[in-house]
Length: 407
Ligand SMILES: Cc1cc2nc3c(=O)[nH]c(=O)nc-3n(C[C@H](O)[C@H](O)[C@H](O)COP(=O)(O)O)c2cc1C
Image 1: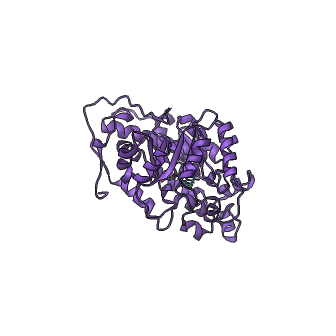
Image 2 (image 1 turned 60 degrees about the vertical axis):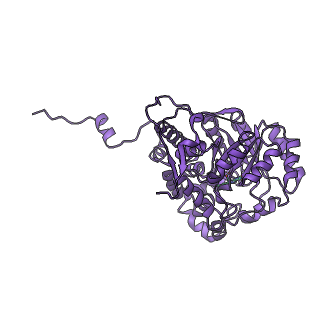
Image 3 (image 1 turned 90 degrees about the vertical axis):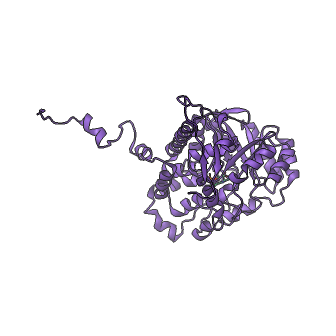
């Protein structure tokens, strides 16, 4: 019979899942999130419902968003075996420069509402991860401040062409002067989409201290404390109006925008020009003929036209039509690394990630964004290894198909 002894702490700690002492409680909480879905659940507990809904929601019945997600649920891979997958290269080239991962962090407006640090947290992670990040025209950090915070990041600037073209030109001058690599023109926003959650929540810019919001303060003290004790929450590139987000967008967006505006942009911006919000083969051809460098198949994450088509479903036809002349990116509904791999196999040069990193931002600021990028990296790597590929250029359409139903 073996002699008994008291266990040592070093032996018990791993058994009871004691926290790695190098991690703060906050980081340990994020580490326990195994997926972006877990991060989303944590985010929901961290911010007031109107803020979560603004991020999580979409337009109308939200069917554009749910269909995009459903398309990824229908993905089926054909893996290959008997290949050495011990070393995997996740990098790819976007706009002729290396991106360490095959995705970029998408432009999102009003980011300091999700977390008081906002865009600086996102760009810092992008710089560290070696991937591009797009600052939005509706961002809450100025073009200059973002450049100063992350001078070495691959910074893109997402442009909404305003009714006032001279003001747009002045903004583009600042973008150029601050070393932004590319201009990304968003085209799916002739007017603001009808985002019912925001209407119902009465979400205004800036958030108003109504009776309802004040009653929530006790439930989200940290969020409110940060809002009230840091720089006022406002757009960095335009003056806030106090209306709902939809009102503001409709005031800012120019519904007259047309092909001549792309020619105008091409004449004043000589760097890479990306056009975001393309939703048909015809428009992909049109903007390619106008000399853009890349297109993003996107329906704005379902936040604009309800019942718009699904980017993943039109991707092969768009790649076939213009893929030899421009880079084709895709976004909308991507919540894990497997989705990214599927998009690449169908022919996308890269993906854009929106809500996934915003859930991280709401859940834990910069650490939360970092955790999301790390989850996606791990999922992309594992998916590729299990598919039998060791580099992005080995992915091709023969390895993937869309089933008719998710199951
Ligand atoms: C909260 C939020 C704000 C956004 N703001 C902008 C914006 O200012 N400009 C823009 O071009 N796209 C904006 N988008 C769209 C994203 O760039 C991207 O197309 C979309 O989020 C991709 O879908 P996903 O969130 O499902 O990944 C926004 C998306 C969200 C969720």
